[in-house]
Image (cartoon, rainbow, N blue to C red):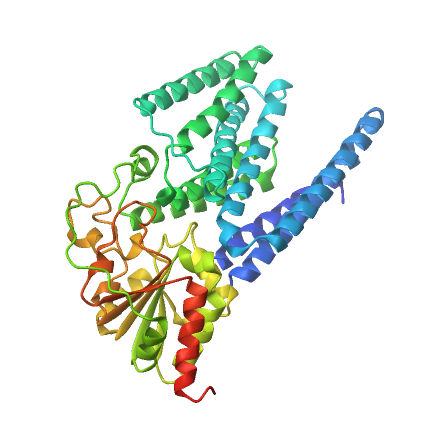
Length: 472
C-alpha cells in the first residue's frame, strides 16, 4: 500500500470521526465522548500529514528534516501549553479560552494563506481566490477573537464608540475586497508590499469590527468567529488539496454559523444588529420609571422557604460561574430533593458568556442532565412553581423584554421567572446586567433580593435547611 492511499484513507477516517464526534456533541449526555472521538480524528489527521515525507525526492531531504523538526517542536509546544492551560483554566475563564482557541485557528488559516500568497504557490483561479478569501477571514477571526478574549478577560475595558465608525469599517472592508480582487486578477503576481498591506488591514479590520461590540453580545461574537475560523480552514484545505482540512473546516463553519443564528434568534436580534448596532450604548435611557422597590431577605429564610416548597426552578447565570458556587448549589438541590421538592434548572440560550456555558458549569458539579431544561421546554412551568431562584442572571430574566416597548431589550425571549409565586434573586449588589438595562424583575411584588456572593449564600441556605433537621 503506497503512502498516498494511506494518507487518503486516514483523512477519510479523520473526517468521519470529526462528523461523528460533532453529532455526539449535540447532547450533553454524549458531549464528552464526542470531544474524545473528534480528538482522535485530529490525531489521525496530524499523523497522516507526516506520511507526505515518504514521497519526497532525495535532494529535498535535508530541508525535509528541518521542517519535520520544526513541526515536532511546534506540536510539543502546542500540546504542552494546551494541556497545562486546559488543566489550569477556571470555569469562569472558559469563554475567553474558547475565544483564544478560535483566534489561533483563524491565525493558522491566515498563516497558510500568507505562505501560499507570498510564495506564489496558490494555483491561479479558484485556488488563488480561496487563498485570498481564507487569508482575509482568518486574519479577521484572529484579531477579532483576541479582542473578544481581552474583553472577556478584563484586559480591555473600553468599548469603542466613534461617530461614523460604521462608515470607516465599511470603507476598510471595501479596500480589502479591492486589494483581494487585484491579487486574484493579477494571478498573484503582486508586490510583497501589497500582500503585507492586505494582511495588516485585515487584522486591523478585525480589531475595529470587534471593539464596538459590548459584553452582552460576546456569546454571539465568539460563535461567529468560530464560524469564520471554520470557513477559513476549509478554504485553505482546498488550496492545499487536503480533504481533512476541507471537511473539518466546513463542518465547523456550518455548525458555527447555525449556532450564531440560533443565538441571535434567542436574543430576538439579527447578526447584523449584533455587529453594527452599538447595543447598550444608551443604557436604559427612555425605559421609563420602574415602580416598586428592591426587598432584601436573609439567605437562610429563603432556603427554609424553598425547603417547604413543592416545586423550585433555578435560573443560573454568569454570577454563578464567577462565585464558583455550582457545587454548593447542587448540594442544596440534593437537600431539597431529599425533602420531596421537585427541582429543575432552566437554561437560557445566551446565559453566561459562551454557548452552553451553564450546561458545562452544572455538568462539572455533577447535576443530572434530566433536571436541566432549555428555555422553550420549561418556560411554561414557571407559573406552576412555588419558588424560582435566579443566581447571577440578569438580562435573561428581565420582564421588560416582554412588556416594555421602550426597553432596549424588548422582544428578547426570556425565562418567565416572574410568573412563579415567589422569586429569589441572588446577586452581589444592585448593579445592572451586560446590556446596562435596569431589571424590572427586582422590583416586582413577588421578588426578594438575596444579596451576597453566590457561594456564601448557598452555604447559608444549606445550613438553614440542615438546622431544621437537627444537622443531619
